[in-house]
Structures are given as C-alpha cells and as structure tokens.
Length: 106
Image 1 (cartoon, rainbow, N blue to C red):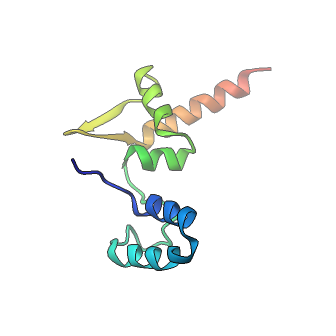
Image 2 (image 1 turned 120 degrees about the horizontal axis):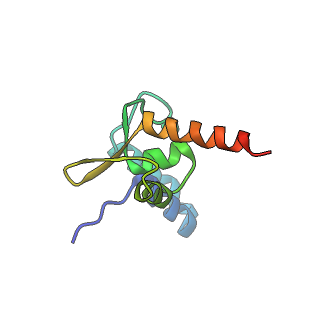
Image 3 (image 1 turned 30 degrees about the horizontal axis):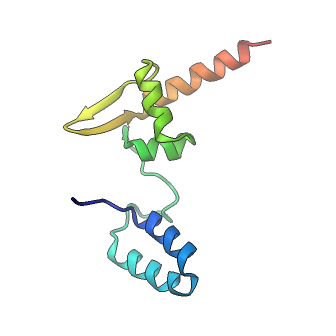
C-alpha cells in the first residue's frame, strides 16, 4: 500500500516533532520537490479546474464542504478518470449566489 504525503504536511509534522531537525528536512524536501509555479508557493496556479485541495485552499473551506456542496447539487464536480476537479467558474458562481442571498436577508 502506498501513501502520498504532501511535502508541506510532512514539514509541519517534522517541525512539531523535532524542531532541531526540521530546517534540514524542510530544505531537503524543497530541494527534492519540483516547484509548482514561479511564485513564492503561497499562490495557487491559475486555471479553469482546481483539485479539491486547491479549491478548498482558495475558497477557505475544507474539502468535505466541497463534497457536501456537490452532493446537494450546489456545485458540479468534474471527474477526469478517478480524479475530481472543480470548475473555478462554478465555484465563483456559487460564491456570488451566497453573497446575493446574504445581502437579501434583512
């Protein structure tokens, strides 16, 4: 059985467990991990489709919230093979609907 561990998650765990070793491990992880973009790493890549994790980070919700919204038909997940993606336009539409609904409440 193989697990995929995100280098950022591993780095956070190492920092909590062994602060003296953390800097060296983080440096090694960064050296081994290809850069996602030319930015500082905090920005998400621009694109039409987002992974659940990217969408959750960008819209400040957890991935479970995205799953629940999809189950209720409020957003539409896009399946590419076994991978799930979310349309940025669909998420923007949902945010706009929520904003308008909140503004309509007295």
